[in-house]
Amino acid sequence: MKKEEQKMNNIYQIKTSSNGRNVLIIKGFLSIDNIKELNAEDFDVIYVEDFNQSHYDLSYQLQHMSPFHSLKCHLKPCFLASTLKNRVLHLEPLIDGFATTWEDKDINKRVDEIYENLALIDTLDISEVKSNNYVYFIKLCKYAISRGNFTFTLSVEDAYAQGYTKLFVAKQNNFTFNMRDDFIRFNHVLVELGYAKQKKFIERIHVCPHCLSSRLFYMEACPKCDSSHLKEEPMLHHFRCANISPESSYAYDGELRCPKCHHFLRHIGVDYDRPSNVYTCLECSHTFIHTRMKVYCSSCKKTLRPSKLLAYDIYSYEFTPKGILALSSNEAVIAVSKDIWAGYSNFESFLSQIRLFSYSQEKEETIIIYRFKVEGNNANKDSIMQIVSDLHKRYHYNNLSYKGNYIFMAIKVPINIAKESWEHMKEDYEDILKIIDLKYAGIILTEQIYLSQEKEENSNAFIKRICNVNL
Ligand SMILES: [Zn+2]
Ligand SMILES: [Zn+2]
Ligand SMILES: [Zn+2]
Image (cartoon, rainbow, N blue to C red; front, side, top):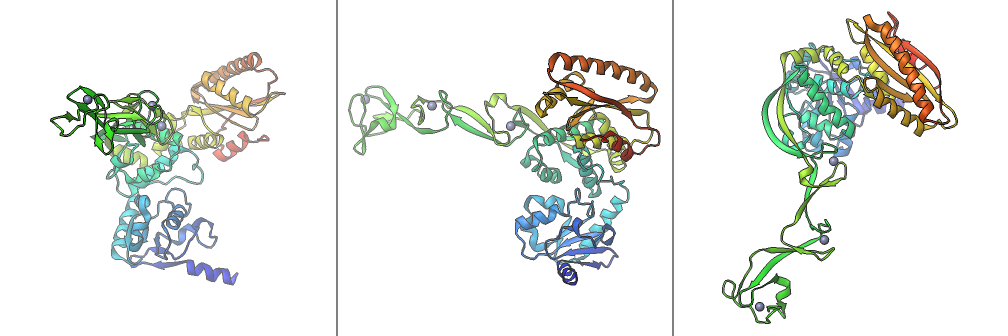
């Protein structure tokens, strides 16, 4: 135990700066959330020293002190030793600055600014809502606002976002496809809600229609077999006999001799010229003058024609005063979650959306959930997913999820028509039973139950009731 403590002390230290902030000084790899003796209240600022860590080690450290994911470091200012500057690479947007020592005066000034901004921002309980993409984006917005970053672009492309929202770009590199979609949708929601507005046109780019990525490769290909294994060479035109063929067909013992009339070619412009280049496909031997372009999307690995690409206009945006207020308070969470309610989500997100609902102050709406079990000889993961997909098509306005053999459907309804909605849901369920009966042999639905949040019931208790079966 004693030894362990000593070891820890070599890895980190907490010292108080001249403006009275506690600085956590990191001197070796530290997984902050996992150190029991280290509490969130113990430090206000993080400073990472240069202990010869590689780029890889440094980015691993930064993940463990993420302003979004780490419970103890949530939104806290973070600085690195100046000598680490060329090792942070694309993660620089997540860092508040560099300094030669933790006592640097510039750090103090910046830390005070950040804390002034943070004082105006309601933070989310990140342990509760971490699994929802939109909440994550709202956390990004809160972070941006706390750093005084009010402009951003909706760009899905790295280069054009440079100078605008490096923060979002840094995070986007790790986005999965469905997250990227959600991110674009989220940005549009911000605009629709009046939280952000267009500032200026940046550029029109082209993106993959399948995954919206702009990481595209353009390649010249054979118009016959689409291979890019091509040889390009000049075409030679022999004036005397009017022969036109690739230069290689004239090669004769180190000289040029016409393959048709066998005369030697001496002077360009007098005997012959090179009117254009010609391509030969090394896969199918086809020769041609114009190549056909193909585009390879390095994100989703599809190959397509340039004409199939989607034009995408990039604008820069800025948060409006209304948006800054809404994003600083938790009003934005409620507004955005209203918009993203419907559709299928994995079970964790499903529960997270229900928790989010509890952030709502004036409850004019209530949630009704119905849960049922899929049983029978043919009940397995595939058939359950098929049923969920069928239900999703039919009840796309509901929120839908499943876990184990249980399917969950949730609707949000205005409180004053909750009773009627309840009756509606019963009819819906009769329909579902019929569909299953017609389409799925060897499957029956059982244990059907309706659940809704009781008055005064907190979200954890409600979620407990939702999950009180063998999932
Ligand atoms: Zn070919
Ligand atoms: Zn000739
Ligand atoms: Zn793609």
